[in-house]
Image (cartoon, rainbow, N blue to C red; front, side):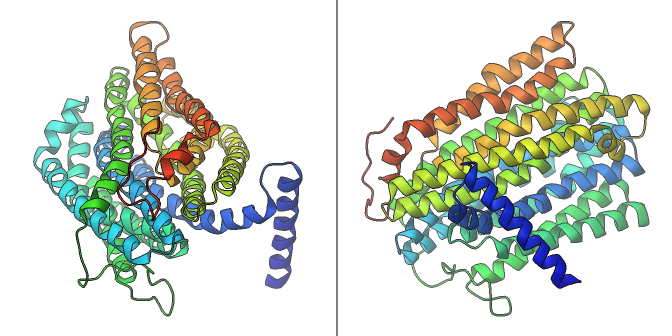
Length: 483
């Protein structure tokens, strides 16, 4: 039986690969490499994003809409910090993949050490600020009453786990940079399962409510960090998964040239991610003016989009790794071909996935809220989020390609334009005109659609190839004037 199912799955996969090749979406040989890197990261993305989503669903069932809104406020602060780690990890994968592709493993390992040092310096004040100022922070963006209490509790309990999350992001991207996306997938998936078990037990079994949800999430993130630390030090998991660029006490820990390169590549990524996180706060404040039910609905929509964004985790890191490795080997035309194919594949996947979510919008809303009026409002945000996921997915593959080249400044500017010149103004218009909540729907779409267009223009210009030349193993600290 299992053999027949396996054979059937293989035949379906071959048919799909052939159809995509014939349609000019992606070359069959490049599809195999892309999916080999992408599917474990997609699973990893779902595992990571499911943590907050599970907490939201369980709290919505056990406590109610106000607590869901409170978690939405806390998530905004958590994600702001996490976006810093994603930006730093993005710079890490860019330099690791190019140095590893250029057969400079020692240099790639030193990049990882620089990343860990920078991460420690960044995360310590963030954790302290969140723990000590949680209530004031949540109140600042509109939290009050039960929502304020829930948001404060969740943020205090989960903030210390950010130290592990910073390490987890760097470890995951380091593995991706050397072509191993399965090891972090297994660790992250295991953490997601642990989170589900702990959250359900602590919230529904032990009756600990929001505190239990936060504790389950914090413990599961720490567990993933401990597991990944084993492989990152060069030790294997039953004969597999040892990092080929291990971090150990021996050898140098600091290189000024590499640190400058890391900061130069990472800074625009961090700035872009922080800007994406910051814009959530005025959006939450605007949503709070329409009531806690709207805040909860907005957060559910954002959670759904985050889950859909898991596909982009895979395609983006595949683009970064494959493009970066080809550039590191000096194969610019092949790097372009890989980038184009991954972008086209992501477009097809996102159109299909978003259409499925739109058709199931009301049942999805039912999972998080049970009041009929709240279900309708939440379903509308789910639809808006699914529509916005299409440009999000395409943009993820484009920026992944640019990131593999070390071209991170342009995507930063594109993101700023989308967020602050389009999304936020549209949402504010809804606050002062009859457009109302519709402004928030439009903002969700605009913040992803505008950067996708601008980054697509950058990719077609091929200027990113020139940018990459200053980060290749034989470039040293030489900088090239590129625009």
